[in-house]
Amino acid sequence: MNCQVVQKKLIFFLEKELSGAEMKAVHEHLDICPNCVLFAQEMKATLSILDTDKNPEITPFFYTRVKAKLENQVEAENQVAHRPVLVRVLQPVAFSIILLFGIYGGIRLGNTSSSKSVNVVAEQELIPYWNDLDAEPIEIFLLD
Image (cartoon, rainbow, N blue to C red; front, side):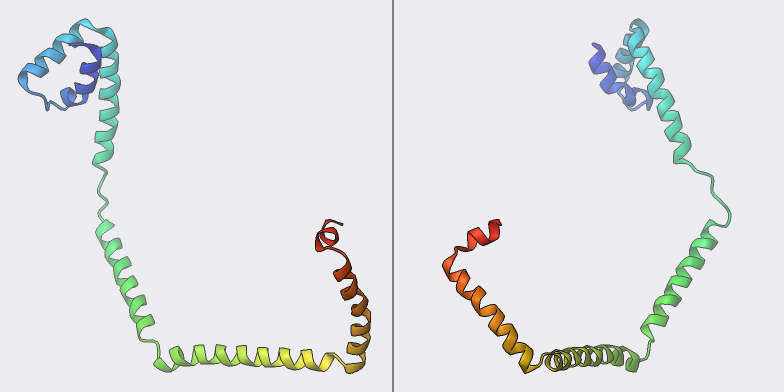
């Protein structure tokens, strides 16, 4: 048996999950190969660490704490579910009304701030620029 095959089967050897003939072959190879022995020792140390982590200590109050958290979560969900229907309906209505007042106020504010004399002056100032845009290509304007 070569080292590569032994290293693939080593975890099963350490867990004693191989057949009798395979166990004997791996054991014989470990007797003659020091590299595989070192690999087996490292693997055994790793598995021992994993075994200790598999079985954590059971705290006596774990079940009590989990049960209390679940009950608190159920109570919180019940409180949210029993919110008055009036509040659930009035909240979106109030937000919609505030939004509409904001839009209406913006429109009113925009209309009152611009007077007709300012518009005429602004139009006279913009007219030459509009004529210049026809004379020059837009690429030159953007590249400057």
